[in-house]
Length: 355
Image 1 (tube, rainbow, N blue to C red):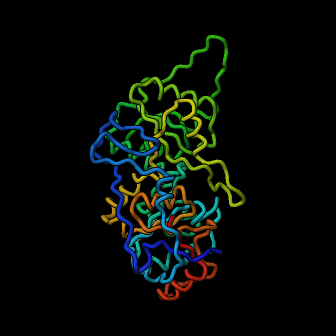
Image 2: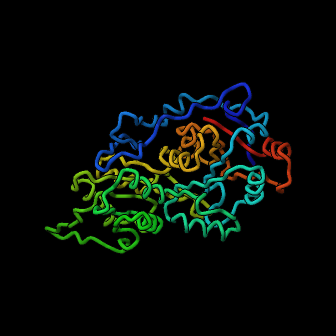
């Protein structure tokens, strides 16, 4: 059960949040990117650093009770949904999701699905949606695996350089589609290091970027290989798909997330990663450009303050926080339901919270 609240941006007496000026110029060139505390920036005077989480929290306005949910629906043209913990948990679809998505589509709303989970490519996520009985176009899906490849394209990462992947198949597939050379991934999951006297570990000097995502095959070999590339290859980038502390691998409990893998490499390199997934604004800027929409016309729906809500805030969007991790109202709505009925349902069982 959720509580009904709204950010001041949803109330008639206040204005929408000011769109963020934090951007990552697509013209940024390889080797000029800066590491700035996990924020995505480039060597450009037009690029601002994402404000820290604590600063964002300090500037937050207390949440107000949702008085007019219908106005919220009418005030935006696009809803961006997180997936894990909002649409599904593990491989289990959350009750009521199909009805709510159908309802929003019937009202002409654009739906986009953004996930920090990098284990699958967009095509693979499309199949997961289909398996769960949801009709979602691949072009509506944006995973952090795709974001990693898109970021490399945006900085003109040299095609003669290689990417070392600490992660799973999703990252490999997106890099391949983007035309980048890669090594690592699941195939390095069985590799071990024999720490004998005088042992020296070789690494590929042509690796120009190390991409770290969630990895169920994570091991010491990968940490050492990635560390060597970042520390010894001039200009080698350290890119993280996300820094999530936990993830929803099953519907029974939370599991250690991609942030734990990123943290290991950060610990050994002493370098902050460039984060391409939420809450970085890279994906938000990409989406806004792709669909030709202003961020003030977007509502970000998620179950986490530190990634989903902050992602929306950093991008200048309205935000919808699902406190329980369950987005949908506890009874069925059909596509013929009126906006007033949907608003009533949100007031009874939905939650909106801006922090």
